[in-house]
Every structure is written in C-alpha cells, then in structure tokens.
Length: 150
Picture 1 (cartoon, rainbow, N blue to C red):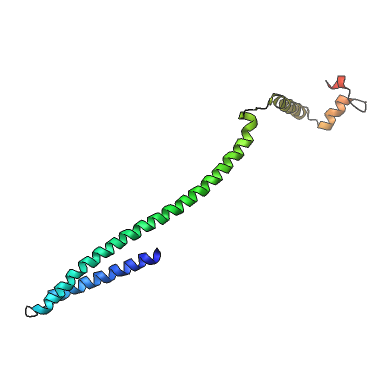
Picture 2: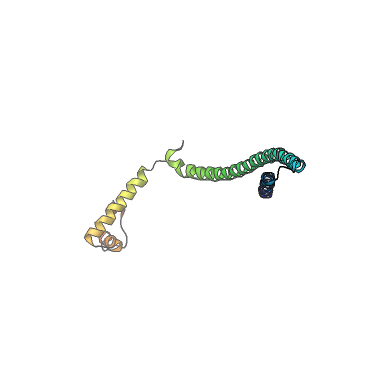
C-alpha cells in the first residue's frame, strides 16, 4: 500500500509537470507555429484522461488502505475483547461467593474479625502484648480451661 501511494504521488507530480510544461510552451509560441501549437494542444488534451485514470486509481488505493486499517483495528479490538472476557471471568469467580447463586454466609467471619479488632484495641489501650494477655487469662495454670476462656 505504501509503495502504491508513493507511485501515485510520483505519477501525480510528473503529470502536473507535463501539464505545466505544455501550457507554458503553448503560451510562449508565436503565431506562425500553428502546426506545432496544434500538436501541443492535442498533447494537453490527452493529459485529461490520464488525470482521470490517476484519480480512479487514487480512489481505489484509498479504499484499499481504509480496508487494511479497518482489518487491523478489528484484530486489535478482538484481542482487547478476549482480554476483557478473561478479566470478567476472573472477577465473576472472585465475586461468586458474594453475589452468586450459592452465596456464602460471612456473618461468622465478620463477627470474628470484629472480635479481633476489639481485642487488639484493648491491647493497645492497656499497652499489653498478646503473650501478656494470654498469661493474664491463663494465670498460673499451664493452659486455659474452656470455662475460663468463655
């Protein structure tokens, strides 16, 4: 496509140069050179169809270039959609426990998390470590009984 566009530009440049040269020679001719003037006029007339052909080729090349660009864009879009579909599947799998058909109950986990937050807050206020709190709960025993823990 690039070579075709370059060739069209070169042809347009040459055609414009020929047309300009013919017109310049026609203006510069003297009145007595009518036979040469007629030949130059015929050559100038022949340039018209050449320009029309070049314009047709230019239009065809433009359409071809647009099709190539469209195909490239479609390929890129398809790749982007594949990536997007994979991300959607991943997000759906991650959100399934929250919004899926078989929702999980997170109440216990949330309550336990709140308990840990409260316990950590108590340790921070009392300026104690987790080991220090455990030693306080345990007392002199080597372990903590269920009654004492609850």
